[in-house]
Length: 125
Image 1 (cartoon, rainbow, N blue to C red):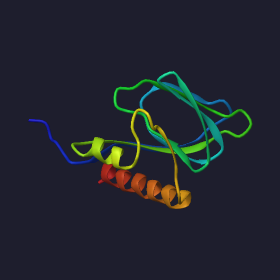
Image 2 (cartoon, one colour):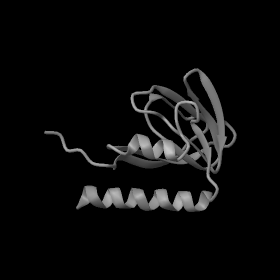
Image 3 (spheres, rainbow, N blue to C red):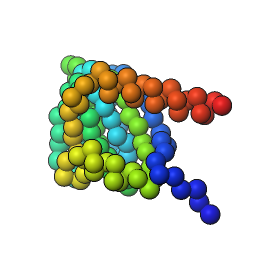
Image 4 (cartoon, helix red, strand yellow):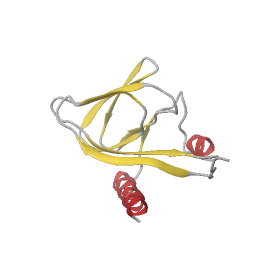
């Protein structure tokens, strides 16, 4: 029997990108602290900057690239579980609404940093 949880983090991380650093095709979700870049999914390009984030849905192939002049510094978190889809929709994100702008970007970044620290502690513990 597979373990099922309401919600759990399956990946997280942070990266300060070099100019034109690209990743993809890939599956991840990101929040931008500094800089800017381009995210492409379902044939649409989205240009993001600090304080914005984007959603990558499960089993979706995407591409993203840091800006040449002002490469982004971002963090990501991947999550799964029985409540993952519902919580994502409650946050206003879905296949038609992939990009968001945080009302409190510093708080969002600090929450992601704490989450990454907690996940790292679980891996080491």
